[in-house]
Image (cartoon, rainbow, N blue to C red; front, side, top):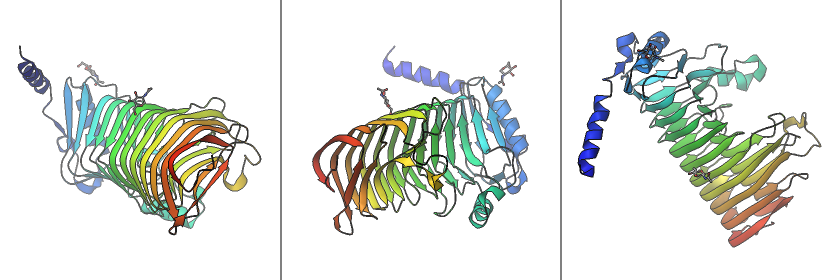
Length: 386
Ligand SMILES: *[C@@H]1O[C@H](CO)[C@@H](O)[C@H](O)[C@H]1NC(C)=O
Ligand SMILES: *[C@@H]1O[C@H](CO)[C@@H](O)[C@H](O)[C@H]1NC(C)=O
C-alpha cells in the first residue's frame, strides 16, 4: 500500500469512529442567557464521555447560562471535542468552590471557538470598594485539573471573576489562539495560571487583564510561551514561589519567546517570597520581547514580602539559575529597566544577557544587581551590572 492510501484508510477509519455529535440543546439546554443549563451540560458530557471513539459536543449559537460545570473523566471516548459556536455565560453568585467550568481526569480533550463570559463585574466592584474578605472570592472560569492531551483553541474569555484559565496537575496542554479580556482595574483576573504541570504550550494569544498575563507556579516544567501579547496587566511571571511549605516543586525548562508587553506593570518577572521554603527556578530562556512603556521590563524579585507580613528580614531559599535574556527591547516606564534583586543566602547564578536595548524617556535606563552572577554579551543597554 502506498503511503497515501494508507493515510486515507486511516482517515476513513478515524471518521467512522467519530460520533455524530452531542448537542446540548438535545439534552435540554436553553440559549436564552437566563435558564440554568448546568444539568443539560452535565448530561451531554456524561453521554459524550461514555461513548467510544471520538465524541463531539456541540454548543450551538446563543447564550447559555451555566451556573456550574464539573466535567469528570476518565472517559471511554479517545477524545471529547467541545465545539462552542455561541457563548457560555456565568453569574456572580456565592459559591462554595472556586471553580466554575472544570475538567478533571480527562485524557484527550479539545475545546474550540466561542466565548465564555464570567460576568465578574459585581465581584470586582465589591473587592474594589470594600475589604476583600467581605466579598465572594469569585470563580476561576476554566480549570483543567489532572488532565492529559488537552487543546484549547480559538476561544474568547471575557471578564472572569477570578483567573480566566488555570491548569493544574496536567500534562500536554496547548492553549492557542485565545483572547482574554478583563479591565485593567479588575482584581485577581489573571489570564492563564499553570501549576504542577508539564508540557504546556501557550501560543498566539492576546491577553488584557487586571493581573498577571501568564503565571507559572511551583512544578511548572517544559513550558513554551510563544507569540503572546500582554497588556494591560502585570506581565508574565514565574512565581510567586517559596510559599509552598517544606518541599516545593521547582520550575524548569521554560521558554518565553516573541512576546509584546504594552503598558504592563512587569515584563518578564521571576518572583519568590523572602521565606525559608526551598525550591528552584532553572533553565529559563526569555527571547525576543518588545516592551512598550513597561514599569519593570526585566525583574527578578527574591524579596517579595507584601505588607512586610510573615517574612521580613528573611531571605529566599529558592535558587534561581540559568536564566537567559536575549533580544529584549523597547521602553521602560521607570528608570530601573533591569532589576536583579536576588537572595542573599541563595544568590542568582548563570544569568545571561544578550542584545538588550531598553530606554527610559529616550535615554538609557539603568540596571540594578544584588547577589546576581552571570555574563553579558552583544550590545547591552542599559549597561550590565552582572
Ligand atoms: C464506558 O462504557 C461502559 C459500557 O458501555 C459503561 O458501562 C460505562 O459507564 C462507560 N464509562 C463512562 C465513564 O461513561
Ligand atoms: C523543554 O521543553 C520543551 C517544550 O517547551 C520540550 O520540547 C523539550 O523537550 C524540553 N527539554 C528537556 C531537556 O526536557
